[in-house]
Image 1 (cartoon, each protein chain N blue to C red):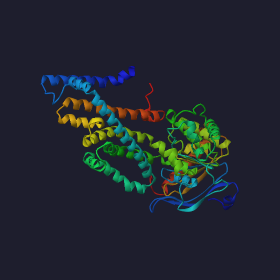
Image 2: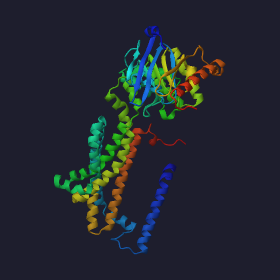
Image 3: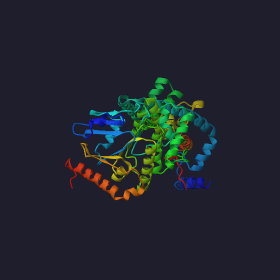
Image 4: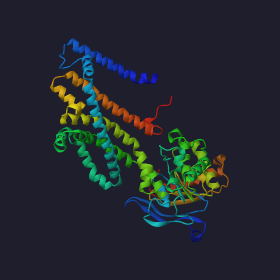
Length: 261
Length: 264
């Protein structure tokens, strides 16, 4: 409990100060609510619109999860394939970089055109944006192995499969989780971008849809509420990855070790 | 420098004949090495950094291919596990416990779980690490990690034991302790050992024979026999021991002078 307080105390204090200044500024300068609503007003709106926010949260959560899972599967398989051959890596890796640099917001309308305005388009955007960090990091982990250990195993007649299973794969785990931590947040962002472009409301409405929808109606307080929920979702994804990585590697990896005191 | 009759002797385990190793046109690591190591012998290779002594060890291990000449490993089964190699650093897998690290190379050989565990625990005991079977490498000191590395190779019951500067990164006391333990292990098991080091004292203390290699391109400057039968800590202070160390050091300097580099 003391630990939790020590950890969460300072950032929470900052939050309280920012909220206080925000509230004060809105009052003192008499900023109109459609430009910048005060925190109390955002909270009220969030309560009032809780049903729609829940729908948005649920849909965004589903799309982000599917996008991240797809990126994980394709990213890891891709990294394994690229790690087997220098030639393949040289031929394909630059294209993965290109895929990463293509502005996904600009491509998203194409997906809508090709596969229709729905979950698939949204997931595609999330997938593309989340793929590269997982692919690049896992690949790095698979190839940056200790050459002496590989020699040692080869001397005992170990084949590529055995070396992969006993050295390369476990060696790549910390790198993989680094990629996952980055991609988890990106998947949520990708989903929201996708929802903004797809623009499906009602039961299918995601948080991204509500951002656009409420902004055009100058419901700035609702925009704020949506952004806060989206950020919360992103943090949740990130924390889930942190938890997963400490669950898998907690016993051995330096980054997961608690300081002895 | 090596008599022909010796080359044909039954007891010879490793014979290196007229061995050349070039990495490129300019970089010649080894230039005409002749060497034999007999059953149960402990031979050290000393030389300045970059002289090719580690390359020679890798050639004997079969990890490198000679440019010309051969390495004959007679009387050694050409099966996995017959040659044990220990690297300069421990190179342990951080995600495995001590026991699982020691089991690593046995796993390649498809040995049953119980047998593997039994042999691993035995090897761990041989290097004096009982009680640490379930520890992770990060919990061990540098010397203990090196012991695990030794156990990982000993568990194979190698007929030929190759060590590449295994104690280079350790502090003096730990090093001397491990020297005694290694000496005891190789003696007790009649291991044929080839040991690379840049420490003259260590080489003389451990070996039956010290082979001094010159600066690149590496040739054998001198072979020095070490006559002591018993080894004990205090041996290092005897005049005889100091004299042999001085001989080895002399040969080292000659090896550096011959190529005209580093002349003082």
